[in-house]
Image (cartoon, rainbow, N blue to C red; front, side, top):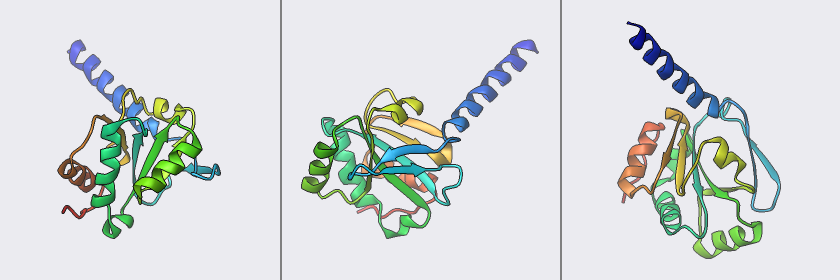
Length: 157
């Protein structure tokens, strides 16, 4: 009985810790360097934070997938933000321009937000709807499934 109670307590503590990840606003920056505050607690849409860097081939592939999967139908229910981790503003701006990235891109200048959400490898995705951090690359179909969990019926080509 004590083992069951202890296990239940540990599970509850882990779930509360996961929920607390999104409790405080997220401070990021636009590609122009302006501060951008995202308050996950009051954001009317479910939020997916896609953490990436230009040097990470799977990250680059996923940005293209996000551009294909996320369309106007998702905009009302899900906000997908591509969060660049710890790269220079000029490098990221040039990359976004050269690759024609349409997904909203913000910058985590020093990787503090990535660490706060317990990121340990790129690409990584924080999904507010499930309060979970997922590491590793996602296929187009997997992104479709993930966005459906977040409240969107994405367009899969």
